[in-house]
Length: 143
Length: 143
DNA sequence: TCTTTTATTGAGACGGTTTATCAATTTCAA
DNA sequence: TTGAAATTGATAAACCGTCTCAATAAAAGA
Ligand SMILES: [Mn+2]
Ligand SMILES: [Mn+2]
Ligand SMILES: [Zn+2]
Ligand SMILES: [Zn+2]
Image (tube, rainbow over all chains, first blue to last red; front, side):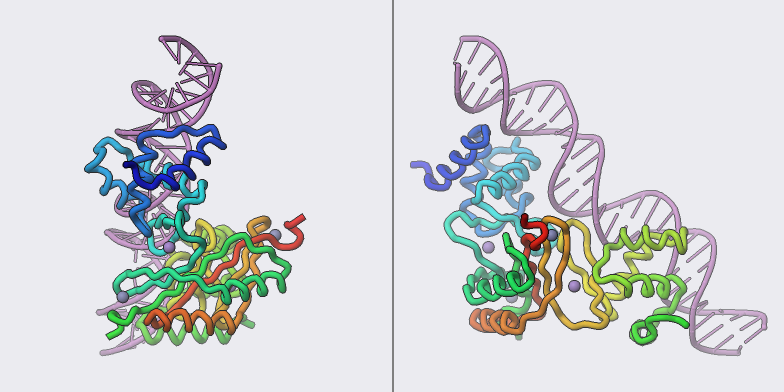
């Protein structure tokens, strides 16, 4: 009956490897997190206040950061607040962001990634991560 | 005898167009800024403390933001603090950042830029700005 | 030049976001 | 079931950058 069995497994494996514990809060937060594409800690805090009014904001932050370490989430800095990006069932991707309505479109482009590697190696670098964000207007916002 | 005549002209033109005034502080900060490739407000604050111990941090922030509006600088968010990028004598560019030693290498790649446009138009977007940062290790840091 | 208007400055208060602290509680392996 | 160790929630603190406001400086006008 429980949802997100696979991701819950990923989390438990990470917990096991690092002597961390599986708690009611971590389960609750993961369930809520996986229903979203991108979410901030505050948004999650308000959203979960109904299910558990005692859940603290610090716990949300700690847990979302834990998900990042476990490879389920990735922190992004589109605006003023950190957005936690659900990457559990998709690989790496980049973003198109509409400065009009705030819409975020995810994309992947191997050609760009390949050219990035080229630039890096030409400069003697080995890339670990990168960030590519395209800001502009979506077609509804353009008129 | 004064340096940075051309950039000082760009600043004065911007000031004129916006009913702003040319001050001793703005001249001092521009001179210092143009000697750098990337600098934070705090760094500039400490650096200028010798020349003018009364110069306030708020003035530095205000002035660097003014340079951005005048097209002399561009704000970047590599790490925790905002880096002001000197773009007075170069056009748009992106960055390679070494997570080992903090070295920053600037680059331009038209092929990547073209592919970005392609991705955008395929999604109905018109791009205004973008941010591309490659994080990794430079060759000295790799061993 | 002298006067008047208007923008700027510096000091510090303030605001928003995230992390640190710590006593009480919960987890989990033995 | 016990006890060591991790976690939690409340809140303080850190951090970075902006705002406020009275004093000052710049530039436009007479
Ligand atoms: Mn995403
Ligand atoms: Mn640069
Ligand atoms: Zn839009
Ligand atoms: Zn390096």
